[in-house]
Image (cartoon, rainbow, N blue to C red):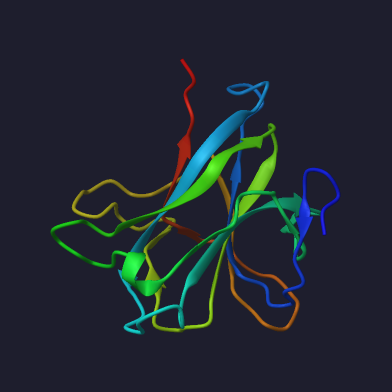
Length: 174
């Protein structure tokens, strides 16, 4: 069902989620996003559609990702064959491209990731750790908010010192 800008999901499992901000000072009228890129370290060896990965953008409600609302058009499902994991030739990037640009007003949102396989592993970051291959420590991420580990008990499990490595691709109209 849909109530205008948001559609409802009936999943009761809380997914892995990383919140992010659309800064009202930098983007006062909002922006359009084209895709989300995630970085996989490992992936499911299953063939076909048995172990897909589902990515959604969700609004934040009372400081937590919504358990039932998904930004319309922001759900992308990829099968294992379309996911790149720890491939030195292609990198580890996997793009979840939306069918059309998704408008996000200045606010906080969550990238939510679900799968029925425990074989997927995503790259992330830990505050205070060193950037890979450098002597620079990770001390802040200006547009990144909270990270939530997946649970199936209906409660969000926030992890304060970690985050999901991702890239959000903004549209530029000329």
